[in-house]
Image (cartoon, rainbow, N blue to C red):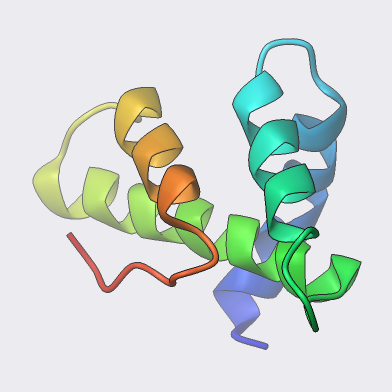
Length: 83
């Protein structure tokens, strides 16, 4: 697992349990309906999307875009490839 993704797993855990980010729980639950995807892999996918948004935020020198993050989550289990 990529180090950046691994470091974001605690944030993903918080988002899964937060009433402010129900779309994260929805994406997680949806991913788990896929055959052969375990909880740890699903969480890594969520963390990858979070890492992608943070990277884009830093590259574009802008605030966190929750709509973009949610869009990336909606694409799962297909992994996004950058912007």
